[in-house]
Image (cartoon, rainbow, N blue to C red):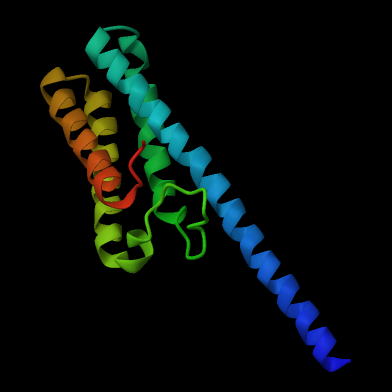
Length: 144
């Protein structure tokens, strides 16, 4: 009887861990899609010179999202459908530094947008793009 209970508990715990990994992945996917949406909006505003009055809103949104990003890659969330590479969990110190660069760059674009000076906004946007690219190049599966 004890062995049957042990097997059942193991299966339930194992299933629960997988469910959590899938739930974490789904949450991360939503957060990262939102980051991408903010990035697309910022780029459209700056390249197309449209809706400049919304630049501050999107820049603040990006900075707020950046504060969440360090917490959306918990151990066990690298499930099969995830684009996240195992290097995230295999090289946690390097990944943490890359995410910190992103957080700093996101805060930078928010500060620059708040000031409204294009001589600061352009370089801040470039820094943000480089931070995003750094993570995508090293920690995200390439799109086919």
